[in-house]
Length: 249
Ligand code: AMP
Image 1 (cartoon, rainbow, N blue to C red):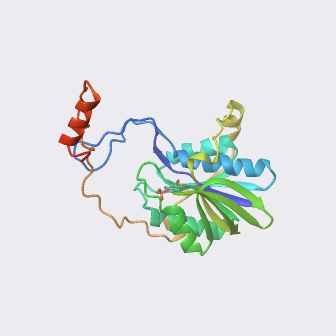
Image 2 (image 1 turned 120 degrees about the horizontal axis):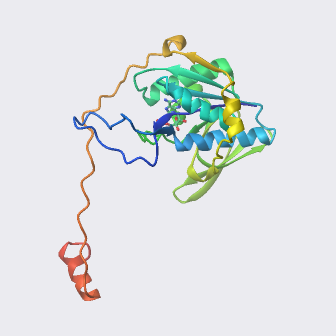
Image 3 (image 1 turned 180 degrees about the vertical axis):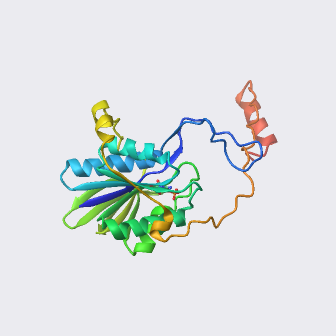
């Protein structure tokens, strides 16, 4: 089974994001960038499927500027076999990403596409669902467990009321949730080995996909600052204060 894993380069999860002075977006200059954490989980899951002998080849794809090659190299060091960089200096919206991935699926013919449930920069949570719709494939989103069961893939999903398990017929799209696994750190020998794994460079035009944005960002602003708290001397005073602000009747 061939597995395709799309990986996005995003601001590192530990960076305190700052809004640009002109409110057009967030500051990206000199900011640490990393693989989207949910995509690390997707790569890890694909590598585990390969270790179990279920997956035969793992192809990783990144759509973005040239530096996304670093993200692909990280995935290759974790155990993916080869990479595809679709170079675009402009940010590509989820629909554009899904259309490009649909074309790549057409060429590569994977049985499973394993994506993150969302990219932590824009928090869209759309690409996997759009890709499944474009391909007409089954989808298992927010996966906390993935198991092969004959010619099906059993995906346990984190839903509001608990866990739901769905049996997906293949080919299928799966998106990863936080509890699916704990991604490994790439070892130094594997980082060295990854340097010689192939990465093909493409452009959106190579796939005949128009990626011009359809949304216009009007303004990006910081959330309001949290008000300082106060200390109360007794339970009665606490209840009085809560009544004052209308938190209780
Ligand atoms: P989103 O719908 O933007 O929240 O992203 C969901 C998932 O789609 C991510 O976790 C990635 O697996 C994939 N994805 C989104 N944008 C890109 C991109 N530019 N390159 C590669 N994969 C992407």
